[in-house]
Image (tube, rainbow, N blue to C red; front, side, top):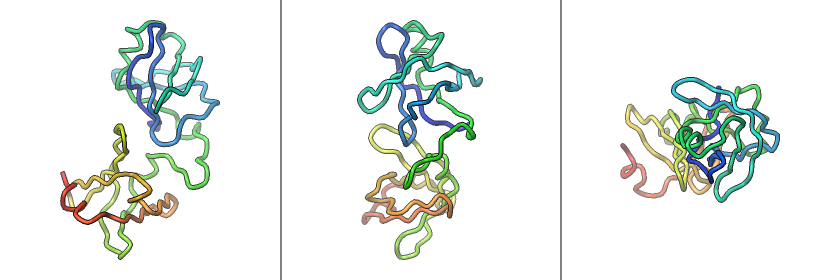
Length: 167
């Protein structure tokens, strides 16, 4: 199962949930999602999907109250990899970035993507740099070329970012 987003809260009092996708927005044909609740992946039929600000709202069959929706807050939304539509040109799923080599334009090897954090405002690449984590914003201004087939990301890093962003 591949994480495609996160339930970030409830919406209204009829059981709708706020959904933040990882990367590309969900496909209109998304009919069933799996939500990891308490360590188990539970299938939910999507009755409605609507754009809502920077995210989306789901109405899930069987989730009919605000309390039931609130219990899903923070839970990952998953899909079997085979069920995911192929990404469009110059698009990718965030899970495909894990394992990519990260280099600068002058050929400096920064490390390998260990994880991608989806946080409000800007997703972050977590790059393993000789055993230490380096956070790089996943933005076009920094990630100049992403080639998931070659497992390579070319970055242009602003002065000082490599020193300030290690955790």
